[in-house]
Length: 209
Image (cartoon, rainbow, N blue to C red; front, side):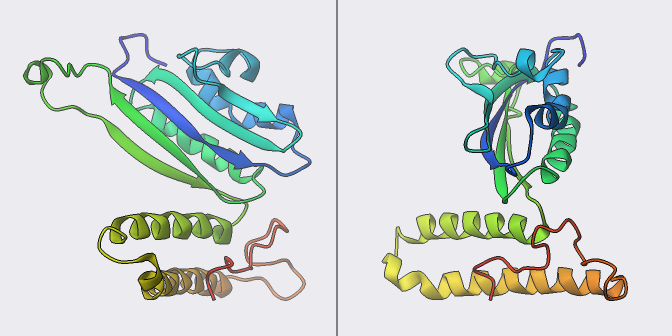
């Protein structure tokens, strides 16, 4: 991480269900880009958030759950660390999950907004999962939730079944297109599945029929 004053306070929030065989050592290695960015030498040292009232990075071995409510000072280069962490968590996740990341502009003065120009605050949602189907499932569920929350201002929830069905159609088309693209380069029978990994990669999300 750079030594100059960080431009952002970056908050990472989410929970990821991990496979039952995942160990602390594996999780520590997967999250290394994050705790290393914070200047720590291990997950134990780097798990603490910048704010004492936030639980930080927690591994619940009983429930096989990674819980994240963690803030670090940083810059745009933290996005690369996030990309690496997401790729690593794909290998450990037992189900799809969403990770919310908020970049708060540390240089923006709300009291005198004209002095620093417009705020550079940003918000992104990243997705991890053991296979494309599990990731699409989470994306679908979040989209449906957002649409229902928006449309219930004008319609009764019971009237929105058709909207949800259309969303499912769109995700089914996207999933089928993905499967078709993988089928093109699929090895001969007996050589392994299109997605690999042995975690139901070829299975459609439960709402995508």
